[in-house]
Length: 298
Ligand SMILES: Cc1cc2nc3c(=O)[nH]c(=O)nc-3n(C[C@H](O)[C@H](O)[C@H](O)COP(=O)(O)OP(=O)(O)OC[C@H]3O[C@@H](n4cnc5c(N)ncnc54)[C@H](O)[C@@H]3O)c2cc1C
Image (cartoon, rainbow, N blue to C red; front, side, top):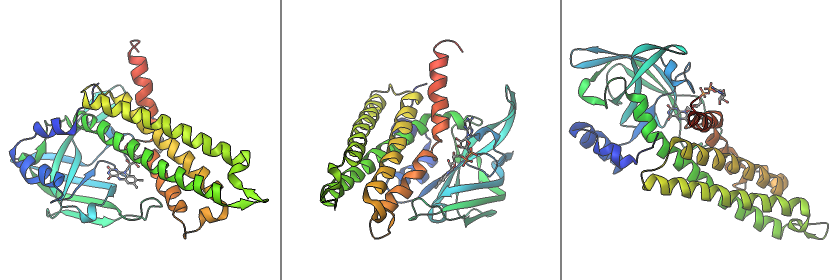
């Protein structure tokens, strides 16, 4: 399956959705959040139970979402809700539809969830929908087609995780190399000890590989040729590379690496979430493996 550029998806949206929600969000005039994950449905999104039942010209939404980033400062929610179910090979699975929901809609409660160790600058929220009425006109795409819509844009969003990981790792490497050149123990810069120098060499090599993988996927996206597996490989490798680089940096900085006086401990904390959100590393591996097996008819 090919992943589309977000601008193509925008062109497919109709007047009200485009003009009142998506374009103002792109211009930074309104803030959106994406609500997919539920307490009982994380990686397995098709087990979601938040429901949207048609009633005249509205959908009536019931259910709970959690871990929703910056919902407390958002103007509207890109909500994924079950509008039915079908019998599939893994049993009954939800048919998912996307709705654009204003945050001040009656029946919707937004509260802050637990604090996260990564990215302390913004919060994850819990959303509770209780008989929340959303106009049918606010539906994005066709009913029951929400997951294929998601597949079309998640690839691009995974590339942003890969690019973020590459950028952060470059800063981490520069800081670690500078520290290893300056910090002296046993009468010489610690970088001259092979145990430290080889860690820097591995960080630099993996960083270059992750950057090339990310750039290659981005070039394919621009050419309309990027597959879900291309994006998954870039996200998987770059986010795991960043985790290894940050861990090595803490080691190279020694005790100072764990002190809040320097940014190293924050880089290390912030890196951790990149392997979890937008699909965990395990889910990326599933996507890559599935594309390999499908090519052989399995
Ligand atoms: C800081 C933060 C912000 C987030 N922001 C948002 C947001 O804005 N909107 C939103 O909708 N969601 C958001 N999420 C949720 C995020 O997308 C989920 O946490 C992620 O998809 C994993 O779901 P889960 O946490 O329920 O873990 P689970 O799905 O319960 O997974 C637990 C473990 O089991 C593994 N696992 C699960 N299934 C398989 C399998 N088939 N094969 C192998 N291993 C498997 C996983 O890889 C993981 O290691 C956020 C999460 C975090 C931490």
